[in-house]
Amino acid sequence: MGAVICVLFDIFRVMRMFVRPTVLSAFWQDIVFWLVAAVLTYCFLLAYCYGITRGYVLFGELLGFLLCRFTLSAVLIAAMSRVVHVVRSIVAFVKIRIFRPISKKIRIFARVVAQKARVLQKIKNKLTENAKKHLNFRRKTAYNNEE
Image (cartoon, rainbow, N blue to C red; front, side, top):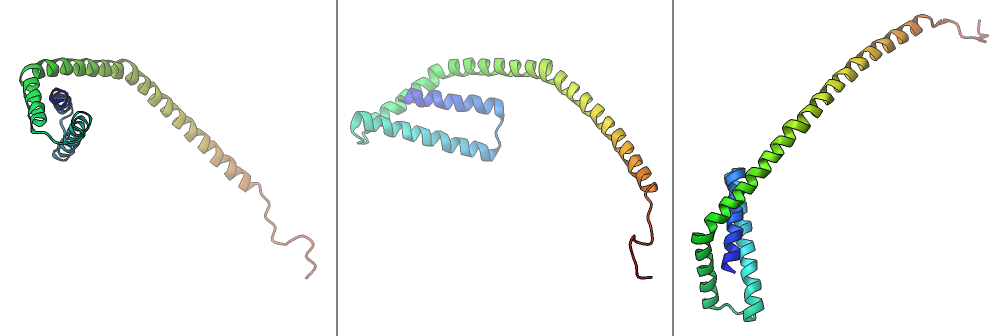
């Protein structure tokens, strides 16, 4: 169980290497890590010791964590950081080669549509002004017999 918690800890370490969390987010990540570690330990104790806390189980968990941390952890972090690096390079490639040209075309299309909309607005304004000029406003109302 200690090795599993160590691998989980390494995952959090790799996330912190590449995300650069703020103090508050690092605090919450620590809280989440310790809650998950506590739940894993509790489930392990429940499954194998009938829920009774045994000192040798906790010592074994600590020993497994430390052995994993000082032997396997460097290899795991190197492998995970390479995977994250590859994923980042793929995302950068997709962003540069696919999304940037599409966004440029969308911006050009939006400019053309905005220009056409301005032209149509001017035409509409001219038509309404011309229509108002040709309206005949009469001072007298029809069928008014009060004279």
